[in-house]
Image (cartoon, rainbow, N blue to C red):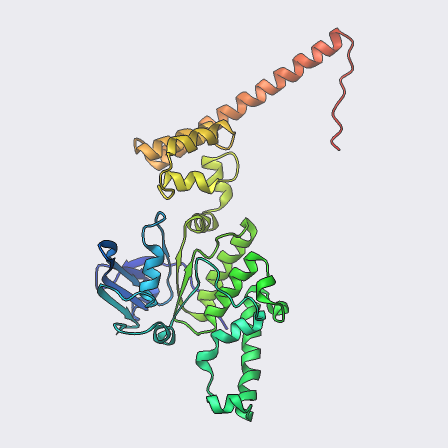
Length: 355
């Protein structure tokens, strides 16, 4: 029975970090202290500090090249840090290998999908279960009874994990033939199969459509509640989608935009698209009709910080109302003039066939 966590306030931990209040009496699952790595003369990561509670969902955002994936590689010991300390469940991970880190409780997915394409979906999940196989190499080679018992257990466990994403019916499908979004989900399931206490997701929603992203957001919360683990994800568009998920896309788009929010616009405003001029993005969005007059004012006000968010949004709503009223009046006037001309010259007013 999974435990449903209520949203709680963040409180000070006995350090400079903050963690969820519900995790205050537990050892943080991860602590990074002054972490850094150099590649020759390049300082890729420097003085990185982070504390994650045992049931926390944390996000790591930043522009391309900021070192987000490098941090993940440091946590999983793909790279050994040049300096700093990584504590997992309070234990120092210095000198550990990637395999040892996985056994200690960190699992991850990758920015570029890394599945065994020629194996079935179920076999990919079973690979993640190999750390929990109690039989010996000898028992595996000669297919002794203990091996078959473990295989049955692994089969049942694999189907159980696949059911999180409703993929149990795809168990015998070749992994490489799955749609892109399904491959992303399978990679998460394979990581969960290693029984982690911390799940690292590198841009998990990359390449997914909006409905798949929405489903993924719900499943990440479900995973946290079901397995009572921490989740840390690298996110760009996904971070915004989480915002939409908790605030409501209708409310957010109603205060800023007349149409669904464009990720590129918000990313540019947040500075997450390198070498991108905010003014160009805003102008093009307004001229294309994506950004309304009120939204244009609100974004300008908030970006320049000359009004508080509540005042800017209030004025924006008023401007959008005036703009919509003007458009309605203009449309009525055009239709009335068209009707008068039709009557004056004896023309029939044919409506367009909606088909």
